[in-house]
Image (cartoon, rainbow, N blue to C red; front, side, top):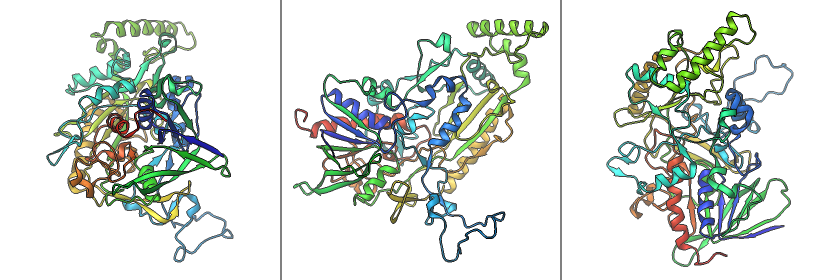
Length: 557
């Protein structure tokens, strides 16, 4: 039997949960964090792309991402496998819904599914493999909707969140590859192209390794990410592969409810009894698993799972034009340092080629030049967020016979607005792989959003045409709904008690009418977003920490 008595229990170990833990421990509180997933790195929740191998060849990381994405709702298919041995088992689709053990969901319709939506079960969550883009939401586009401002003022919170995540725009800006793409697009008339804000920092050995350090949960936790670190104030414990299956709710004596305890399974030893006593409970395990836990606990406000937003997403990969590469030195003339590096490398390669020395390189980017990382910010007149970069995804791998230094990825993220009909529902009977209520999606874009998606695609193709030809298999396309992994709104935030019917938490991230339960994550964003949501989720958690501290006793337990 394991027993823990703490001030605060945090369910979920992504950057948002880590923000709660870090700030509360700095205030002298004792915090226990649990996560259903395994610990994959020496320190808690490191970004797996920091590995030397993936720094040298980012395309190899695509298989890591695919391996860590667990689909949330797979529509049942009764299409026959026509090449199957006729003597094999076959069910009658008129009588049976399908193979539920294959993670298929018989309640899910293909046409309104977010078919690529997924979660990551690991300490660090999605941040173990995220792109680490951390733009702020646009004040008029994403922090305002129908004339209503965001429920809380993020002005002072954004800088704090950026510091926690180590936001930077200068890590890639001296790379010849980055500068070339930026210069080409500026000359083509795309003057708003600038450095993409990223949660990344320069490594001290960058001159030798050509590597960077991507931020994740370990970055937010700081010294706490070391399992052997003892904080000077509060106490921190993290339990991997411990699943919270239920919040136990009781009356708090004031007409509200409170969480009296939790039911937790040790996934390494299901025979073990785990007892956790806490004063405050924080659930920050994603935009789907968070409302799933509330539903399983019998906490089902009217808005739970409703007002779901997700982004339509257009994608393509280009290979830089011959005409651009032929004039590489001319393009880099405004940047003397990059020009000098490329000129020296070009001279060396041409010497090797002329003298038949093996290993001569026809691409004149030195191998240590970092990839481009650029963006075009969303605005009210152009409501989509544009990333022009080179990274690994669960899609769009580069063939081995195309030099990846020539490849530029374009990912355009659109915007959907909250509507009650767009929702995730949870089954009373069906269970997912972890024994929790099976989620089922009902999502569609409205007419205006579909028209904007068409405009977004046209814009992406115009930008792409300035750079090069399309990679075979990665021509301009809309990706499977849910693939951005930016679902929001499922536990949306309201401003005042008048918003109770259309929200789950107040402006302090506290669940309405539950005195000691707070939520964190993208599910709280009430208006939809074009930009990546993590920075705003961390900023929102910083505000919530102040309220948590107010309801805790004066001293820690």
